[in-house]
Image 1 (cartoon, rainbow, N blue to C red):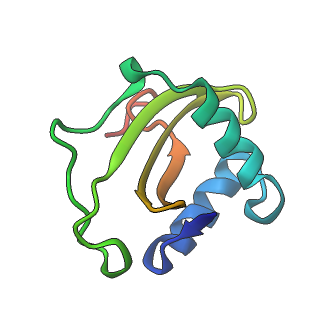
Image 2 (cartoon, one colour):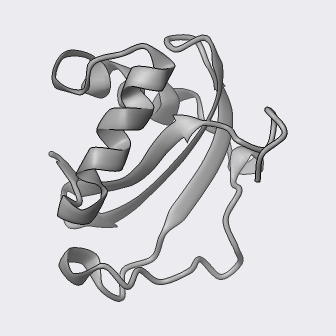
Image 3 (cartoon, helix red, strand yellow):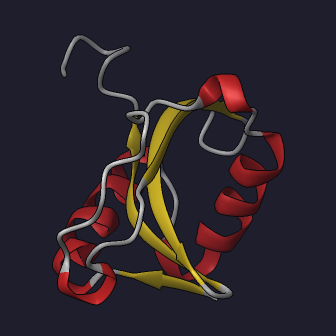
Amino acid sequence: LIILLDDQEESIISDALELGYEVENELIDILSDLLSRTKSEDYAGTRPPQKSYEREIKGLELFAFRINSNLPGCKVYYKFSIQGNELWLVSLHKDRKTDGRT
């Protein structure tokens, strides 16, 4: 089960449009592709992982990755937490470090 954080939903939808996909129809395919191809060397977070301050996932570890994606066809950054069998998507957007932004 994939869950979007209430506070991040608008941002994720906006970033999805920039990447050229629709959240409703293509998010699961994109995340499946990213998760199946992500390797430990793609990890972009801190060690130990940061803890979330968002109400729904407060205290859970945040896992961030940068990886080239076949579906949007660019390098993307994504961050999530896991609680039981739920994946809480915190961020998914074009990697801003590769386009000159931080």
